Amino acid sequence: MTEKSYRDRRAISQLIREVRVRIWTWDPIGLAQIGAPEDEYDCLVGPVTGALRECLSAEEMAARLHLHVIDHFGVEPTGTEAFSVGILAWYRESADSFLR
Image: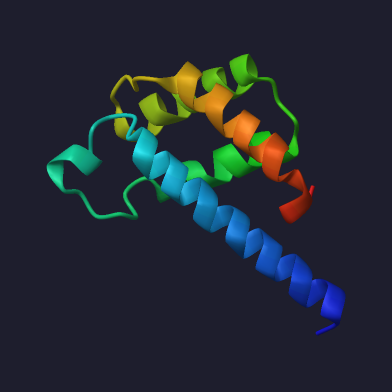
């Protein structure tokens, strides 16, 4: 493995860890509040990181996540717009730390 690919993998792993923490903190359907396993929202990591890498707007990301949560869990999420705005702001501030 080259030094660059090693750094790329580390950056991607760090991005995924950070996104997981932010999704868990968001807790779109209240699973964290009832003691669900911490990997319960891992199905959202791909859509969130994909939206970040695609440079979607907050509105586009919120719409995508809203539908994904409904499709996957069958429940309306809360705070989708606020989460999208917040994670986009965080990502823009942290962009130098992660791959695009």
